[in-house]
Image 1 (cartoon, rainbow, N blue to C red):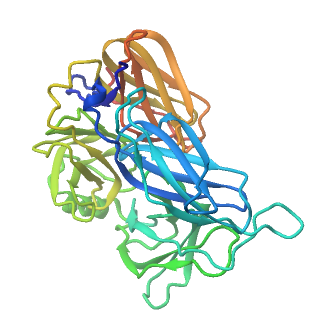
Image 2: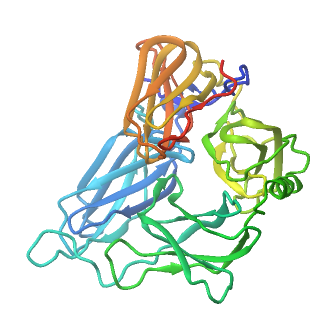
Image 3: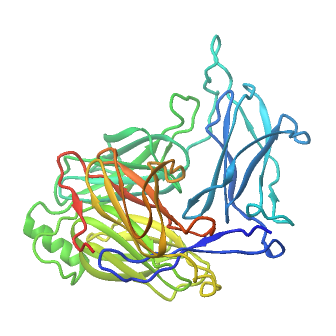
Length: 479
């Protein structure tokens, strides 16, 4: 009987240019195959007058089928995507588009995710039925019309003030759907008459739509009040806007000496001398590497020398543990004594004790040692070079294998690929034709010799291309 593949990570820190993240494969027979679990969803998204996208996440690669119809007990139409899913930090993401629907019509649907490919004997899972309603068609055209009311935008995370300098700050938050992004701010909590905004939409991430609005022209050493506004779907009316309560931040002092003192007071004995600019940002990563059942190493690179501090925990709203490393531009922090098979959340902290970047990872299960003997990533992946239109991504594997990078600006849809010739155990892939100052997400994949059925795969990780006119980023400690 054909055997199913489970991919997992394993590695150890072996080189200055990278911390290791490893992944391997194991197989299980049909009789031992556990049932697929739906971790999130299903939900109906991108609903128009004639189509909708159904999304959900499972704990392992599986089939992705949507059953739907206008009657709950007669969902005899189907739509599906290719077997597998898109690997994310939370599981395998599935997106199935349904087309040819009738406008202004309520549809029922459920989803089916089948067990590991080629396995029989149980393991399929079906959800209960759900509903969505297509939009009304505009008179005289097939375009979608705005409904009389829309669901209110929800703020999932934030807002928080980041990258604070003496004259600027970045306000960041995440919403459950694409929306406008506006910040109201001022010196008086009851008179926040100034505004800043970014284009409608947001940047798609695994947790929602991310918004980052930069406020400029601020006064040094001054406390500001702010609140954020995220509007409903583009062009829609009838409610749906949301504003948060007010928050505060304080700009840094304008003098180099005072700013350095301010940062050193917050950072403590950081080991960084001279003027420390808090506008340093994370350019590559963070990337969880060397993931085992009990530990992980977080790797990232910043645009300048800064502290190396990670706050982490199992509750994203209560990161009550802290780990530190040596300050610099390349950062690596080991998190130890973790629980097996557990999802952890983490924040990368700035000198002003503000969150610069964040992420999550899942430790391996208690059977980690038994499943760690096949192909795996032993070093990396890391970003070795990054400029405004290309990136060089490097990693190593235990055996000669393929070198493939999947990437894109949507963490849940890595539809572009770049690769190097098959047969290396040290892999370097150049990703070209990127856009300047743009956030990209990527995973690396290495398949073993033909017909072995084994593959190692990293977790999704971000990098930001260099802006036009700025100096390229090179790993300060190359291999």
